[in-house]
Length: 200
Image 1 (cartoon, rainbow, N blue to C red):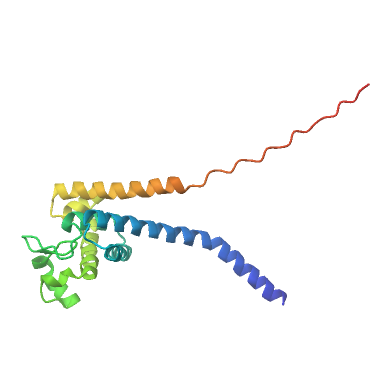
Image 2 (image 1 turned 90 degrees about the vertical axis):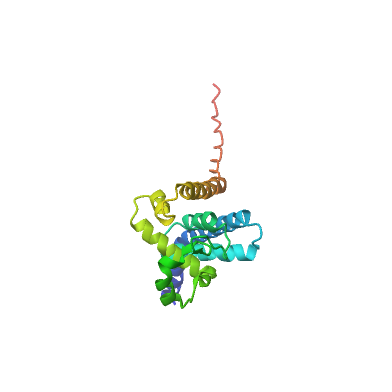
């Protein structure tokens, strides 16, 4: 019986120790998704909250898989396609992250069983493969700016806009963190000790 009680106590201590970091990590994940979703709806007002949330979820999932900043992926989507999954450029770039069909067709056809560029309209395929491309750009780069430059084929305009978007989203996180920091509790006032003076 004593062993059983000790086991329960040990389990309770473990849960107490690890519960706080897990909760804060989940909270951070939620705020990142919310920021991205709000950004997508601001840029493309025709998006429903449901679709914006699904895109934000895919961005976070892909960023985690390829170890990239989800805000960087969101910035690419915003400035490459204005969050339009059916976007097609004159040069043959398709979907949310504007993947160049002729440059990636053989890999995309083999991996995703797609016949033509329209297959890249699928948000999941586009975001995951686009994030993989961006990860390879970042692997050859020394900074986020250089990574954006590689992804956009040297577009300084897109790079500047994408960097500004990432900074805005990070600033939003910092502001939220400052407002959520609990105020330091005041120390209770110590009672004044009265000293009795002996009368002669």
